[in-house]
Length: 504
RNA sequence: CGGGGCGUAGCUCAGCCUGGUAGAGCGCUUGCUUUGGGAGCAAGAAGUCGUCAGUUCGAAUCUGGCCGCCCCGACCA
Image (cartoon, rainbow, N blue to C red; front, side, top):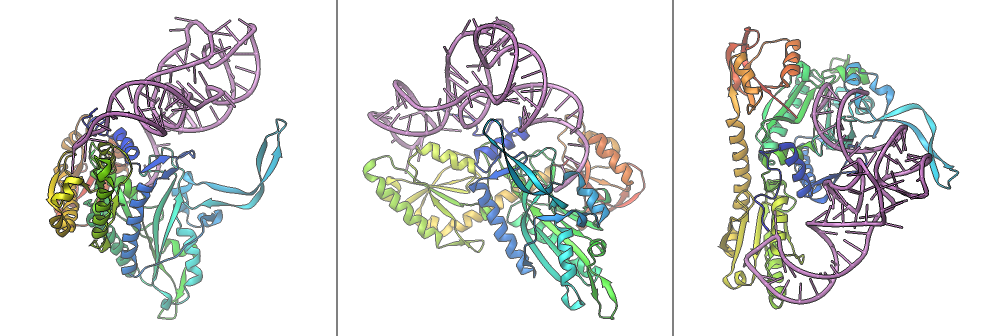
């Protein structure tokens, strides 16, 4: 039996359905019995562990420390910052009871009835600004206590109307950085620093190019003064917000009363920031790099970078082949890539070779090695790169492979970034008129990122969003977008182009 | 919360219109064959047909209530 592609439908045919099939075929996650919540399976969680480890190192390098705050937030905390509370009001899970009472039913079964009503309900954190703010208020007394640079790895819950695995789930894993500073300048610098950390991480670890920029007022985080975002383009040419960094001004300091005695002996409010990325990064990665045979995981974050497939056609040489594979794996693990020991897996399962091979293709392992009796004799290995076709295979001397393996992984990492960058650049257009804009996003057109001069109002921005389902993804920070022009809608002067796109 | 659809084996679904004791493909188990490639043949395990009630001699099938899920909108990392 042979199929043209491992995943059906293909990306061209039906991208959303392709995405769901890839998540399943690559064994990354599944829907759970709890609506909107996912079970992240080992292969998917392995990606998250690598993301976590590598980002965490960057947070530490930039002076942050980890801490942990409660899952439950007193309802009253959310009431302290009106704009923030309203922003999350429609998606909060609320805990109202603290015990259950067993109630015997006439049919012999037992029903558990919530009892012990709470005086004040708790909200399951949709984000932790308020509760961390309360802690900060206790911790900060003097300007000498600042800056306070804290990160937390946690789960949060936002009761989403329409969940999709990794992209939008009711519960998701993320990290949220929260910092407090003496001055606005320092806080803004922190916001931008972490924004840059995210952009670099996406580019160098996930092989996804992003456009760093600021959000418009309409798209800002509820309660923030400024929101910075990294926007990526995925293969259906839609934009996805992959990470955000917020300058919160003194809004949350005011709400939580984070005050300190300054150098001038006056009481002052701190300036705070918050920033986060979530398991959505995994969804972004799938849509950025996947092909019609499954996901392709960039080597830096792949749970296994190399899978060795023993080829055992005869029972009497089977053990010899497996021993040779184990020995090769051991040798490989002594090398490092991206500062970490190579992650190598030997798939010894007693399955047919082809079936095994396709499984790892679908799971997106960067390198597959095949080693059989003939390879042992000829001291070679068969090497398959996931960024090339499923049939592409090269027999190379084992010693050469061992010498070049990290270069090979880097080459795959680079080729993924290159491919993603080319896709984005090919679908990013400077347009000048409303007609061009409508044609770009209209029925039947490809879409993509439209770089437009913009000087419209919030209401005009909203109208475009409603009429065309297109929003301003960001106001880019890079100089390459700066140029004089006139707004395509209002004709008013503009000094920079902004990115319009349909988004996830 | 509006509009549509669906609940039958681990998964995807057929059967329902026209009521008569449960089916397929994939997956799983075992055996034989095959083996540098998602294999073939044979045998086998597996379902209170979402739930509660009604109609009926008899309900997966007809009627009604309830529950759950999916898709399309509004909301969003």
